[in-house]
Structure formats: C-alpha cells, structure tokens
Image 1 (tube, one colour):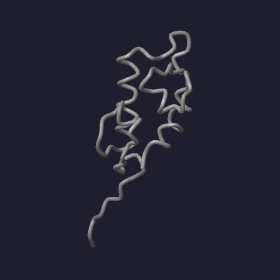
Image 2 (cartoon, rainbow, N blue to C red):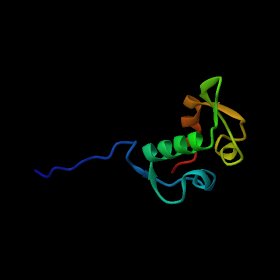
Image 3 (cartoon, helix red, strand yellow):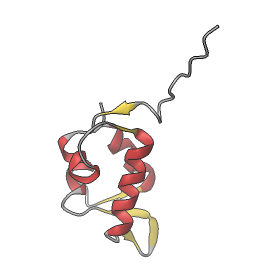
Image 4 (tube, rainbow, N blue to C red):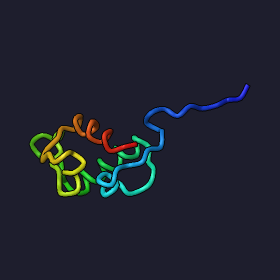
Length: 86
C-alpha cells in the first residue's frame, strides 16, 4: 500500500493577487507562508497599533489587500488575505 501524504489547507500552494504579491512577493506560497510574511512585514514596518497590538494599521501597500481599510484586527486580516489567494 502506497504511503501518500495529503497536503492540508495551510500547506497547499496558492497564487497571491497582484496587491498581495506587492507585500509577500510573487510566486506560489502556502497560506501559512503568506501569513508569516505578512506578519514579518507588519513588524518590520511597525504597523501594529501600540495601544492595541491586535490591530494592524495599514500602510499604502496593505490598504489594497485590506480593501481600502485603514485598520483591521489580526483576525479580520485572515479573511482579507483569503480573498487574495487562488
């Protein structure tokens, strides 16, 4: 019997939209890699609200990903990211 591994939803390679690729880079990435790269970008650019670390303050690159919103919660962010992955 062959041992086949199924890839789960977090490991499946997905293609980011042009807006998301501007932040995470072009090419296929897993959902987990996208979230990791987004958090790296957020921390590198100090985009967390200092008064509420669960809130992300969008800069010019993140606004198109967050559908024009200035601020999103870390939980809401995942909903927006899903809409930019195919």
